[in-house]
Length: 372
Length: 241
Image (cartoon, rainbow over all chains, first blue to last red; front, side):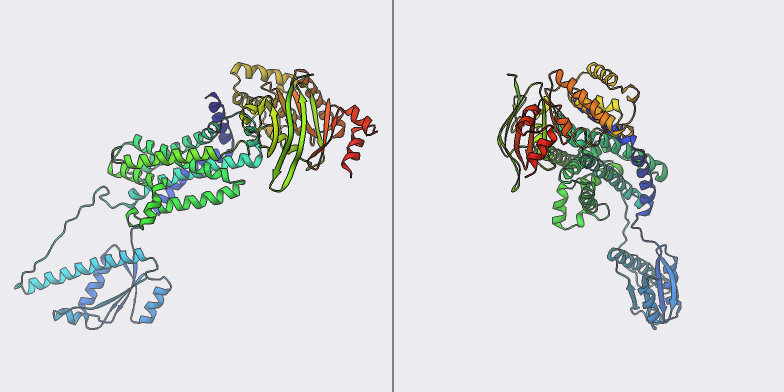
């Protein structure tokens, strides 16, 4: 056991003697939080509209005003030429074309169906769908307005209608920052766990110092634990730092137990460090390691459900996520921070993380050869 | 005769179809300075790595400090010191930190590490370097320090792989004085080199060529046998076909 202490001390000395790394491990999380949390959002604002109003009636203008008044849409162009509008869409000058054909106002006035044509730039399918949904909402509103006017002027027919009152739970303000921040915290600890420890190990191979270690009676798991320990500590420190920034800069709510979140992150970091050190046993150079680790990290992060809902992934992808530590922490962080989930609610995630941590650490120790 | 600390019989090491060590047999006694000579690529380092438990033999019998090189590599490692061609102390640690680290790895007590540290710094006039980073030391000093670290835990055998490569003649002379001093304490020294003058300092030498041991005896007997005045002549007569 004393050996581990000597080895861990050596790692700390080396990390904090490196002028760049010792500062970067604390500067990077701060920057990451301040940049990514406000930047990554799926909120749709300022959809730019090109309007082709061939009708020019009070009804068509009423619709246009309604659109312009909503927070989502901005009338960017008004034209009478379809070619020009198509061109604007092609050059990304607008996101949507709304064409109001002549007769729109007349049809409505006669109690017939008014017809519109909307063309949406669907390069990004999900934002196109959102645009469409928002647009529908505005049209529905406008429809209701028309009906109300109709009832006032012609109060004969009572109109049956269904009204929905909805409540958004856990994130009442639909603030994307609250959703993204726990996820960004995951990315932060992932990067610390994935990159530094593995690179550190491969660096010893490159310089040749690992040979001097291999020729001593040091136990393999002592050496592996000593490589993990400093980065586990740095990862948790960064997490604390990230939370403080979240509180100060974004006033993030924290419903659950902070301790529980740190417990989850600790197990997670051991798992990720295990994966990283496992990869390092295959890599002879830092370049090789970076390439493989980066590839794994991207897959882990993008499949974790940080941007896309976990439930809407294909079944095979959900199956893959059974061994994806990032997916578990993503759920743990969001559940604990936003829903105030308890240890019982996240016990399945925690158990899975423990299994991954034990498996990969064991693999890393086994694959690390002191005698070739 | 003295106790055998290294016993090798019919050692073969293959990398794919390449035979690096071809049927080697030799023995080394306790306290002996054994020189392992050969041209670059003759297979010296391969043998050294097998003897120090870094690499497994393909076939043959290998016993180091009483332990088997197939199954007991970790026990071998407890009983040997190793200093390699490539300088292997941590350059971003100080002299003291390196010594404390390796002392700790070999399970030495804090007080013993402290004692050895003071001892060692005094012996090789290192006092003023105690808190200097290894990367700030000249090569000769680093090599001396690496050797001191290799024998820090008083091993039975110390393996030196071209320890004086790139070092000036005065430092080399001092280095060999340290080797003599170490051997006089009963530590067996197994050293590879291609400086032929260094070979003269050894108790016995073996000369390797293309993975085979082609000569093995005391320097005097070899010179007599090959009718040469220096080991360098012996070496050239043997190694040149």
